[in-house]
Length: 161
Ligand code: FEO
Image 1 (tube, rainbow, N blue to C red):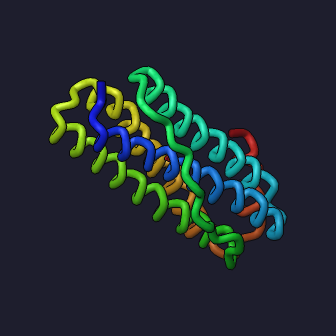
Image 2: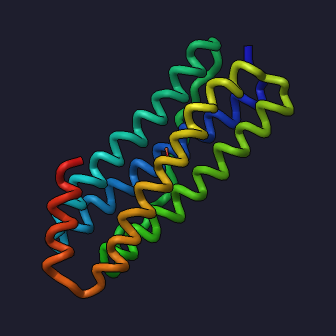
Image 3: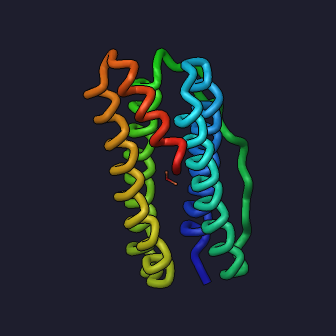
């Protein structure tokens, strides 16, 4: 059994994950305007991952016979100046999600909800990977700068995800 406060916070996180999914879906569309098919594929995969995160929260609530509330998804940005600014937005988003997950851990601790603390550990680890993968691509883009050949190769690499 989980508390009403924990249930509400976990439902809010479903919405956060779905917002992230929608954000990355917008990026997968907009990055095509720069001819980056590999990046589009990468963002589409990222969308899938975020949806899986949302499903994990839903399944966890279900396992506690708790209410699942699907809330309205707030508006997302849809246009970026260049691929680099997209990955900057993505990194900001992942850092925000990390702090949201940390906050969920804090609520679970305060509620003495040990099952939820254990459940959240997967997300704590996942966020380290999420931040690292976005940060790595962003660093590559910074190094590449205006080098079109290097950008082409990075795009090809991201298509393999
Ligand atoms: Fe679900 Fe990218 O964090």
